Length: 520
Figure 1 (tube, rainbow, N blue to C red):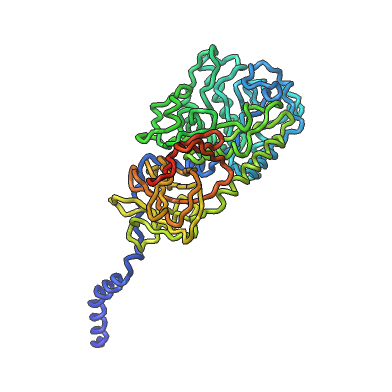
Figure 2 (figure 1 turned 135 degrees about the horizontal axis):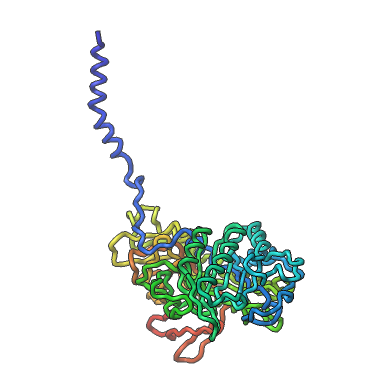
């Protein structure tokens, strides 16, 4: 006979279970449940575009017969015998790049003269016809091996314009030839992270229609992790000049339909498009010397000049592609190495110390409430785009307040956005508390992956970063304050102060009873 007391206990526990469960879950703190992140705003970068942007700087290597003939645009008629870099060491190129803080290298596998730095099976105009390595050498292979060993990403430039190949000008025949060479490069040398091409062609040259769409499809098929650079993308775009200078407003947003390879408006390339439907960030190419190829008569830019370029490229939401051409012996010259090392030391001296990171932060609002650490303003002191401050939705003010706990001098502001969530900020400014009043120090427009703003040295304990306009709720992944003791400042008159940074002029108001402002 069943035990009635057991059945009674069983019935009581079953009836009590819903109450117990309800009490248990109601006891769980609300903060234990994560608040979902805000919706990304389109367009968004691909995984390969993200990795490209995170690299910040790449080293361009212009090398070929031009190195030996003291020319820039070879005719395509130079004898292969001129190419004989007896001391060539591609591992040295990679070592120089890595030591200077560059995480990828891009080689001119074929420049406009048509000479191939690998033994192509589609032409005899290549290293196999040269005396170097007795005609058995392969510059691309040696560089690929060195880059792989050093953990440096490899990119290749294959010039569409070919001044040597006889079928150039015959549309179908040359496109087949080009695709054949591209296939060789993308199937012989392991992972290729960037394919670089352009629309350069001299006046009066043969007319040619390039089948870009077919080329791009093939590249993405053979190297799905590679980004493709050209005037119009599809993955990264030319900034529109060869000085390494981006527009002070620079969107990664772009409309590829508004761009033509070889014929894009430079102003459109420099600024991007706040209404763009495509994510096509900009790449700023510039040479460390006056020319792109090595010339014995030329000297490298100074470290200070390179620093100024860095501010105007990597500091304006772009990747800096710095050309450092190997010399005729096949090595990067000592004077270039010295300039690169000094450039690295300048960056280390300025940016290794965030003067803000020990400060106390508050925000105008925090997504999920002030106790939600997931989107805390303190995330802006972590060097990662994947942690960020996010304000509460539908707010009128977007402000970060910073108490440095003591008076601090600084003249550089660094701001970053979590670009995997889209580029958002349209306009922002920095204020300091001085003499009991808030004064505007610097105003900026776009941020993107990284924005660096320079201004006359200020000193304060209290400051605020204000986002004035944004495409959606602004998100900030990093904020830094730095002291640059190297950029050159001068004051021109008693009525207007001017900042000169290696030739770059910025106007600001003179100090008076109103706010002091610099805008870049």
